[in-house]
Image (cartoon, rainbow, N blue to C red; front, side, top):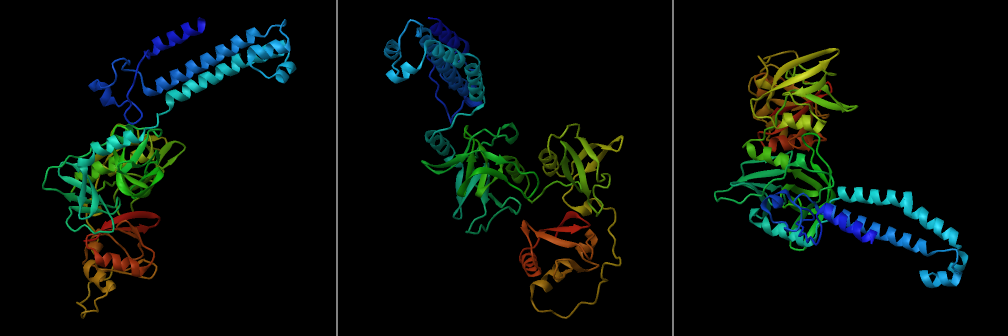
Length: 470
């Protein structure tokens, strides 16, 4: 009677009596609660994990009560044969158990150890996210089908009513607004009005949240987000591989990102910024940062002049009055800053706290007062040379006024070139062309000559900086 009464009280506390919950993707979505689509027999504040937790506790209570009831029956007056009959134990086992030992053992199991087990099971159940089913995945897939668009044989995802994100594939996309080499995505404009996928808020998610990629009905791979990108050029990582590309969806059918092959995907926070500009733009303040012992510091500053207010070793206390919780949050606050925005930094330098404003820019020359026209490292403008063979090296020199040695170091800079006005010098080492890390001179020249308007990554005195080759 006591056990039954306790079980009923537990049901009453959690509001679970005869409740029949229909889960979507393994949990109740916030939107479902607001729209009242959850079964009316369930308290709106009760989650699916609480249901499972309650069931676990009830089972534990039943088991505990049964064990106690069984232990009470072991009386000193019972012989082994009676013990066997009353407990369903084998005769041999019953003979080896004395009433006192059995009673003591049952009491130990039912007291502190078992109580700890029940509490731990209950706590773990509250934290766990229920596993979605294939029906959940199919429902999300069908719901988002209108946003899945074919672009010249490539699978695209509508991210705004007139813009489509298309992962780079084997079939080239010819007509596009831009190609972002860091994300590996084309941005394609559509004349027809689209039904874009609703994007999830990455900052409001947990590692235990399920994500899935469904490429066709009953064909789903799923798991969790293993890691988030910390800086530009990195992508978020899944706990599973995706054989191709596709939409990474949350249990509530929202877009967490776009899978681009393997275990990598472009997260929704980057997709929002990707759709905001027609050109490849990321904010920059002329400094790189690092995280040490839970604090954020300036690791290095741009040798070309930006970020002059910052110094290596400065501790970042806040940006625009907000304390940055991680290196990722700091980097993305700068990367996703609006064009022309100024960020207010509060830093600790030694024992002093300093505040200043830094302009965000994607081009160094916007921050420079006057670029030097000549110095000892820049070759003076020479008479126009005779037509040279149409090679990658000659094309790069003609277009950009740059030459490179075999170790990818700048060998010469034309004094009248945009590269000279920007501030490139002899000795600057080329690291990357677009999103491609280059390893030799031939590869670098071929990539630079192939496409005009690329972003080149150089290194000088241990500091990396970008130059938009035009």
